[in-house]
Length: 245
Image (cartoon, rainbow, N blue to C red; front, side, top):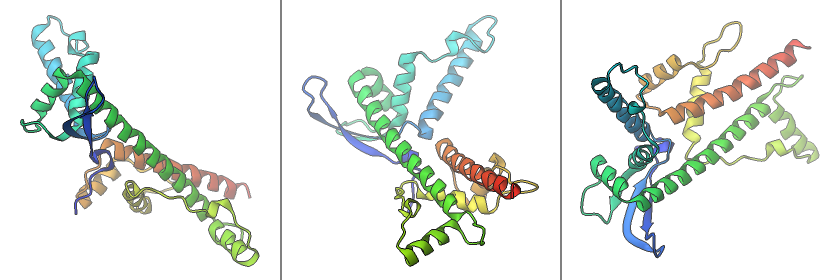
């Protein structure tokens, strides 16, 4: 089974008429705004324009307006990069055909962007819940004066005195993002340490990906780094408490 990166999980929708609001029988499958294909397409187009400017402009300094993407071009390329498949069109779903579709049909382009942005919003909500879960788990793992964890202390209170703490209420994390938590746990267990705990650096991330034949998107790396920051904040607070005793 192949598990797609969360920012490349596709979603199909039916395009609606700009006049009647009814479906027109064209179904387009899109990914979120965070997908690597979008950033790759934009980067390649910028590089192309820079090269064109170098040949066409006298005294090109690398920062010419001719090498910049205008707002409409950026919108068209962004929509094109988010389309991964379609039904209802005879032509195959290729990058060139998607570019033509988005260039010549503004109402389709806008619907592609809207649906894609909706996916991005849901992903951000999933990530926010994952971060909340991480904070809760780290808080419950904190060692108390008697050497037991806070979780063990609160569970004992509940068993013996029926006193329930909100921290013990399970936080439901979407299965869409749980694999990132698992990646973080492995990285966290093997992080470099010296006089203090260091952040997981990009070289360690790359080595981890190479060793396990994993390819993380920039969005997924950002999530793992966010989880790492949560851990470091927790670790530093715990260290300050220990040193103040």
